[in-house]
Length: 445
Ligand code: S3P
Image 1: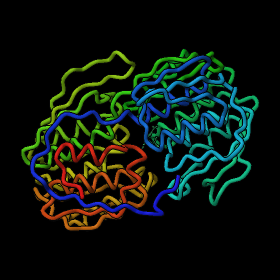
Image 2: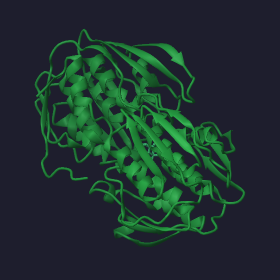
Image 3: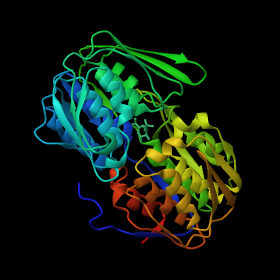
């Protein structure tokens, strides 16, 4: 992937109400998992509604390089013919995951359970992100890192385990990526692999493993946690996967509709898995008009239609235990908080420092440069809402798609236009973001 040789700046200015009915693209987490589990299954997996963003396309390429047959048969329609658990072949070249921590870390788990050597690499943003948190449990299971960049960063070569050991692993941070890597490696281990999390993270891997025929048992652990046990060496069979619309992508038009006066926007098929909907809970507490209808659950994950009407928001306290269910949404929540009346305090955001950028700092900078009062105190972010945002700033995106989209959303209702220095990374998760926002009435030039 060649990004940022040519940065593409963009300006967003307020344009009046947004209106229309849209379906945002398929969920990124589910799209990665469908390709990876399809590659580990025997037989055909058919996926519809796959997110065709760069992150997911890199996972598709990696699964091909590991021996699976992966084909695009139509818009969002893909088939995968897998190699079976433990059946990956050594790739001929390094696997390049571009900007994607999820694709890379889940693939590391899958490779750790196969007796092959593979090199993992990514772009400048991914090369800065911590990988030790994934390698610690994978090494306990018998895989080895044979070379890596500085302080255990990418590029990295991993030797998968010939005879992986099942382990019981307590994740040190609430991370679905760590949990998923351990479970994917555990597929090749004899016996039961168990992951214990003090705070439950998104459970798409567990749900999809069951859908592909694995035996997975989940129980509650403490007040907010879970214990997930997977019986190793199952015969995974190919399955049909329908990918619902991504709530993390829906967050952008939702917040834009809330802050642009007079807006009325409908979003269809939005995934409503409770481990992903912390933003909607928070926005409702802030006074947002979000009407949910057409609930259905016929494809393994719940989904619903959302109608959003512009609302005067008020500041709230967001508790730290809500963080795993909205970890990717704090950036755009901070934008909503800036338009609210009163102070919003978001607690327990340490994980934001190790995402595609240091999102705690980048979000504070995005707001400050547009005249919003914001403070970082330890791991908390405090935004002082004044009911309007002066705007007029140039936002640095730091190779981070969600910073770019949050800043453009802010511009749809700010007093003066908001500029972003580079929109190219939006293609990693939401390739149609700009045309979709324009179709709703946003003024992006
Ligand atoms: C994801 C998990 C989250 C999230 C990422 C997608 C996943 O990361 O930030 O965008 O699909 O498992 P962590 O698990 O590291 O919190």
